[in-house]
Image (cartoon, rainbow, N blue to C red; front, side):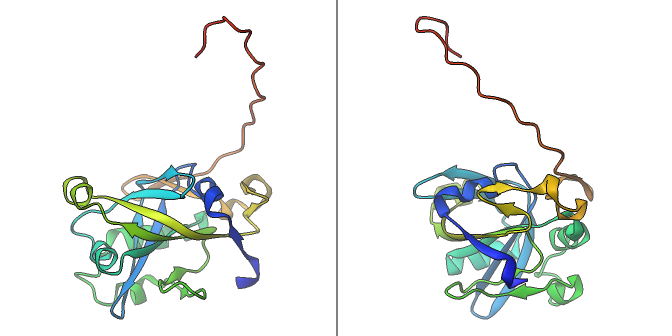
Length: 202
């Protein structure tokens, strides 16, 4: 699997999450690892590359991130829907063997002291930008994307290739109650012609 993992320039990493997929968030601190599901992840800036993620105060992973100040956002695929749902509906606070029971497979990349989830289509390694008010009042965390990678079978030349692969390689979009959609077919719109000076602008 590692043969297919290729780096993505941080300034272009927003393309990995710009379509609003369900994600998995992993973190590590003091020997404790965890992975949770999160749907509210959003690109924030290009340079420096940043993103936001909403983490509820009850989430065990949130505590790991607050202490370690680092985390990984990963983009799982349709084949992992059951795994995503399990990781999002079970807490390490209540189940010490959550990861073992979920069957999640973790791996590491050089220079990143955070576990990554195998089988995903993309990974974004972030360092926390502490914003105490946002974190406490809105559960909103900001991460600076320090490195990113994608599986070249799903993301190539700066673009997703979902329409060219098997259906189980498409990203997931979570609604509620275990109900997901997968990324659909592409729709390309040609550039609009330039407006004549003086015409109303949008």
